[in-house]
Image (cartoon, rainbow, N blue to C red; front, top):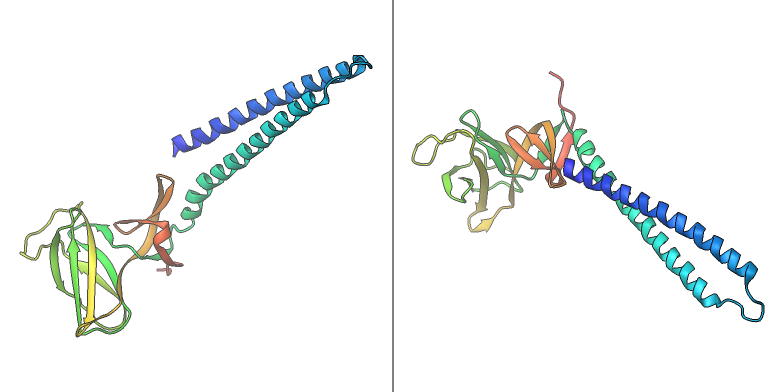
Length: 222
């Protein structure tokens, strides 16, 4: 974040310096041109094409500087607005289409949504290497959104340590027909951060990109 702001500041500084130089050169050019026109030989007037070409070149440089100003302004707005906008989510309840979260306190929390009731719904927990560490039936097969808490144990019964990042996969079907399903992360937003220019929200033990959020509401008063 500091590097990005520094880059924007330096770009603005260079543009300002270039404009100051251009203004000075333009004023000098006009002064010299005026003197030449006043003192030119009527029998051998100055070639208008030369100073017209110089005016065109200066106009082109000025247009480029104006473009630089616009790009700098847009970059500054993106840097300031991205994190500032995400901060408005703090304290609210958010729902995101996101499946990765940390194992903390011996548990990991997800939600899953079914587009219709299913005869069979299977959940799988996958570690950071892509390995399935646990598979089991979902606690609810009816249409709608349901919560699921994993206790951090593998299918073989071993307890995995806290700190690992795991993802949930849901597979639902009615007979041989697949049922539409997706994994969600739901909870109260406790913080925001900017990574590579992308705003992220902290929801429980998950770090969720703002772009994956599909719903936000006020957290109920307790």
